[in-house]
Picture 1 (cartoon, rainbow, N blue to C red):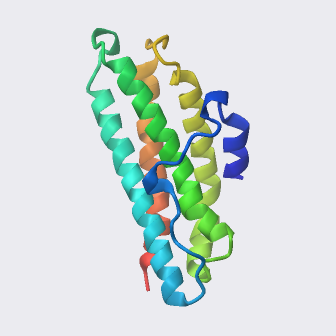
Picture 2 (picture 1 turned 135 degrees about the horizontal axis):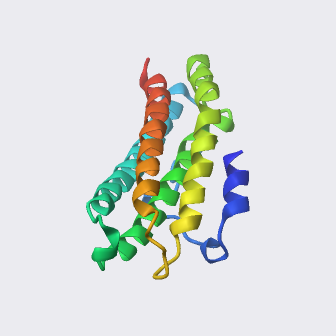
Length: 173
């Protein structure tokens, strides 16, 4: 479902965009439980790194209020939007794809994934809406940014909580 959301919403300039090195999946196909566990830990590590980068940029951007008075706010907003989309897409490609391809066999993990996935999809859509509104290079209207950024902060917190439920299920032995 997230692949469809990203495919439908992808901007023409984003097509063909190369994945950042930490988002590529260098892990080979695995069969043993230990290999699958190692691969899932790799996916978690990549997801958490992208989340941390996004939250750091969020904090830096939020500190620029009022945005109109900071010349660097628009450039930082573009950097934040790129990181936000990378993180959102990375969560799917690094973690949910792994689960969707039946590489995860533990039923407890699959139950948590089934419980959290609908909310993750809803949050993803709202994140993409924010990106569509503010991925506008130097012609952004920043009048609503403070309120929209506050809402994105809440969504990121909710998303992190949902992802953490899944991560805890995946690392719990």
